[in-house]
Amino acid sequence: MIIGIIGGTGFYETRLLDQEHERNISTPYGQVGLKMGSYKGREVAFLARHGAGHTVPPHLVNYRANIWALREIGATKVIATAAVGSLQKDLKPGDVVLVDQFLDFTKSRPQTFFEGNESGVLHVDVTEPYCPSLRREIGQAAARIQVSLHDGGTYVCTEGPRYETPAEIRMFRSLGGDVVGMTSVPEVVLAREAALCYATIALVTNYAAGIATRPLSHQEVLAAMDSAQGMLNQIVLSVLEDVSESRPCGCPRAALELGSLGNAGQKS
Ligand code: HPA
Image (cartoon, rainbow, N blue to C red; front, side, top):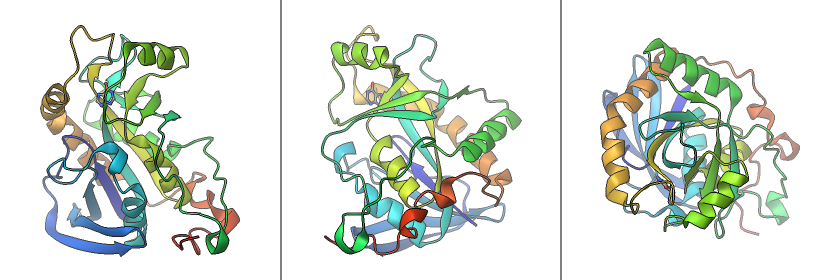
């Protein structure tokens, strides 16, 4: 079994992987560079969502190529990290949230591998967008190293790259949002189409606009990620140590209507 790790803002490498080497994967959507390696015998494929030097903004991330590449090399479970702003006073900067739902406010991103014609049309079920069994494994892994996290939360995904207005944040809160970020959609949706188990470990880097007492900055987000990097790394390594091959969830069957990816990736 190969575990995929998608590192978000401030998470550009996994330390401690043995036999690290680069692999370039060709996909119908372009090339993807992966760092392959292993941790305590577990094979790992690491991918920096924004590129190694944060050169790709959230609305231009090649989400389809990334997910396709992870599936192509045989990953079955994917752990993503994400920096988020908090909409709730009790989700403080430095807190970790294992999100379980999303609200999608993106505007211009391809959200599917299935573009009609030969690839067919898939209306994928997202009742449980983030894999419940992988989330459980992450929760247990964090508990083993005595890191507490918030189990569940609704991720509001905005288009970015700008931050939100306080009015938008008030609206997101009233709709039930807990944290806000710019990348979980369409990543989680594509992972589901690709029948991967996918979960996001969200790190609260700041209070969202209007809740924060000063203007937001990317520097602040990076600084918060930097201080939490060691802890996030520990959680990920703890998951790798104990993650099971079994998949007692619905993820493997999520795209079965169309026989999994089948002809997807063909241009319509
Ligand atoms: N808004 C959107 N994305 C973010 C934020 C935020 O406040 N913090 C980190 N990523």
